Length: 203
Image 1 (cartoon, rainbow, N blue to C red):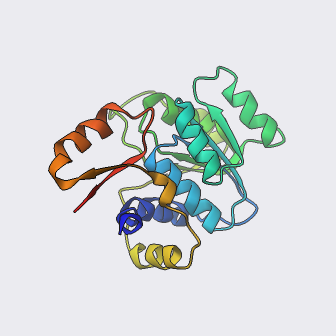
Image 2: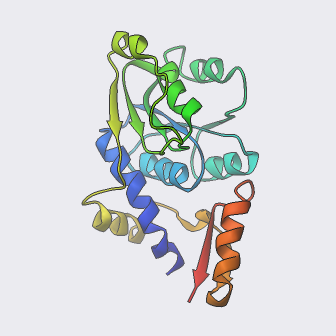
């Protein structure tokens, strides 16, 4: 039942990867290794993508990303992040960029990491509705930008993947609370992002 509760966030990752038309042979970068970033990594791997790069500002979450299948992990605060991504992609950049952090700076950086003709998938919701974006480079690289608003028509497929063992959602669950401690669970999840992923409430 705990893993079944993780199907909802998994649906976001599966839908995002489906919208991106990810195929084996693509390289992918996931910006943000929170719950949605981690399920996006799982979705990419289930789709046959082996070259997955993940970033986050918390080392705990980067370790989780690696445990869940990311081939390379980098701290998002690294000033040489663009250079590091270029190095592991043979100087080209990635074919797919998934912004899951909901951060203005990472949204602006998506173009930097992109290969020519790449697809940028915006999943996270930034704190600002309007901000500077590198439009000229977006045009020059012929990038496709896709918006994601939750998911549609993928729930059954997510359950099938879980039942077939094609995705591993157990590592998402880092803390457990009883129903009586729901308030504590909500406060913990909000205040301890650096050392937790998903807290579940057992009924």
